[in-house]
Image 1 (cartoon, helix red, strand yellow):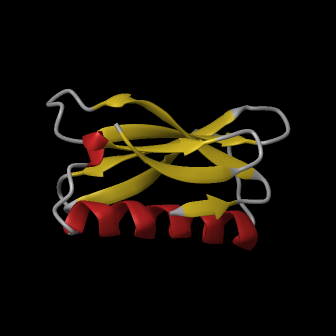
Image 2: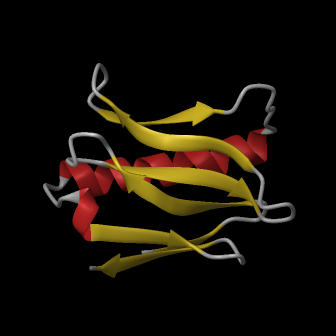
Length: 100
């Protein structure tokens, strides 16, 4: 899976406290500023986006975040351990699925 986003990228940040899921930072391509995190939300049994306070998003950015979430949740639901899948966002906005 390789996905390019126009204004944002996702960077693997670490594992959850339990070690069962992973956390990604969502950053802007221009300033590399963190605008939110993607992490597991147990009450909904899925990965969700947690925006930083004071951030705002247009429809294009929200669509990219939704696309990332859909892909990550699909991987998780397929029974693959997400901590063994490294989804790397590079400075060009590519998302690369690498087995680790």
